[in-house]
Amino acid sequence: MIDYLDRKGVAAHLMIYVWNKRVNWAEPGSAEDDRYFDHVVKRYQAFPNLVWDVSKEALAYGRNDVNYIHGRIERLRRLDAYDRLVTVHAYNYCRRFPEKIDFISAQLWSSELYSVMRKVWQDMPGKPILNIEHGGYERGPYVVFEGNYTSPEACLERAWQCVFAGTYPTHYWQGAAWNVIIPDMASLEPANRPRLDYYRHMSAFVREYNLGAMKAGDKKSASGFCLHDGANLMIFYVPKENSHIDVRTKGKQGRKMTGRWFNPYNGEYEATFSGVLPQWPRYKKPAGDGFRILVVEIEE
Image (tube, rainbow, N blue to C red):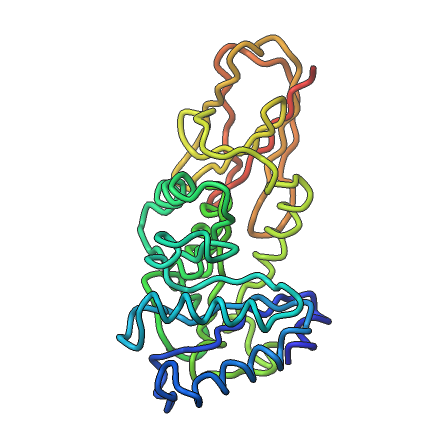
């Protein structure tokens, strides 16, 4: 399975323990526990697409304490000859011990997600941040666990808000969660399939503009969210409630600009326009439901 994922260009985020799924786990720290843990690390470490996670919701079920997690991480790093990335799906652990892990795993469901993720980014400088579970569980043909948000569009909005906060999102589909396995999604009616196309469009856009290298958090518009390169490229998340967005380009009025509207639902650029920047630029969001992405490039 891990090899198949690798051939599909997918990283395997492997949780070594999941303590709330009725598994007859060995006593923590026992010889049996060590035998299981060592087997998993030795079995999977050579796969190039592997990311380690000690446990799902590691401190939530009374199975252990932080010292146990410390010990598992140390044991993992000793055994892993390939130095794969390590995290712990427990934000309370990551927040207290960021030096122990390679990236932060948060689990934050707040309705106003952008500001929450910006706060995490500010509190955890120098560490990549993954909202491993943002409360969105896209609906499928079976109800498994609904979280707080089930529509594909709501889940997509939350994922993009993580991106614009300078962090990383995760996608959950109820058709591939817990006790449900649907090996052939193409066998389902289109209405029951996950909208993975939304995330292909996201991935392509992130790569095209190298969003991981851009700056987040600066207020360069009256509403929405902005990523920018510190010079002449600004990219705006324009919420679905907006009819327009007012852009702030202090000191650049009179310069030529080009703008493009990106539709995150179909991956297409809806409208391209150019002109001279006025003192207070305002741009009308294209017709249609949902949020949009605006790319503004200013000439030197």
